[in-house]
Amino acid sequence: MTASSNDDPFRAKRRRVLAALSVGALAVGSAGLYAAHLAKHAREKMPIVAQGAINLQLPSFQLHDQNGAAFSDQSLQGHAWVANFIFTSCTQTCPRLTARMKDVQRTLAADAGAGRFVKSVSFTVDPENDTPEVLKIYAAKSDADSTRWFFVTGDVDAVKKTITSGFKMTAERVKKGANEYDILHGNWFVYGDKVGNVRGYAQVEKEQEAIDLAHELAALERGDVTASR
Image (cartoon, one colour):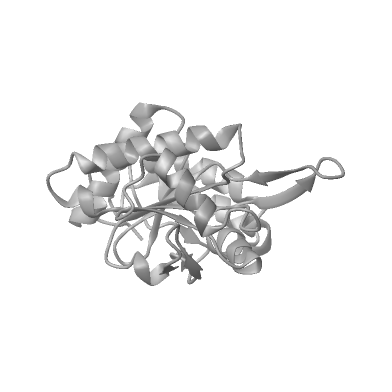
């Protein structure tokens, strides 16, 4: 699957959308709107996602995985990658998001070629409670292959910066009662190529959508997808 540099209708639409969005608004409040626009066309073409004249990149971060090992943006360099955003005590959307990531992993594991080298990352939006130990238990319950699917946490401010400023996703703790809280967070999967370009934001609601995304990731890992700029 290739993206044309000349006849891509999404390219012009993207310019119009981005012209109406400031960098600050896109960082949190408008991320969902922007991601929705991208997802409409992500299945047909995979351009490098841009914010104005700047290509969106895998953000720089220094965090830890479920085994307590250092995990950073450098851990993903050289591989296609996909990220989502969850927290372990979530009983609403997160189990579905994790199930869909599991579908992605299962599809990639069956790929005898490049697909099995794709990296998946689930960033917690609740680093205060989701320690590496907690994430390790959650990963085991999710049948995650720890060599390819990482559950990431770290310093609260560093995690929030990575998610909101880096991936342009919402992550906000909302108090519900004296000892209760909820976390509003983006439900999008963000994915990119081997050199750190963000290639798309996708809502993955169904198993087939996860399978389709896995095939795109395998193509990115093989390097046979041409970017349009």
